[in-house]
Length: 95
Image (cartoon, rainbow, N blue to C red; front, side, top):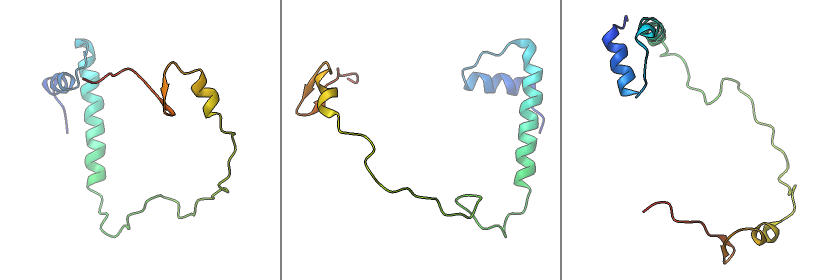
């Protein structure tokens, strides 16, 4: 698939990107190469391929669930600007 100058300008507008006029041919060529690669990957027959969650069929090593740090909640809340009922109070940012 070959992208034209107008396609690159349209894509840049949708992405809210400023693209220099001299760079448009480079972007058109690079984006066209990417779309050609995607088309090539879409053409591959994957009907016999089993979906996998991970490419390696391995079990994850799990560590013991143990506490590694001491509880310092009181220390941190003592230096907080505003605390109430064990919660940090912050200014309202959404109206």
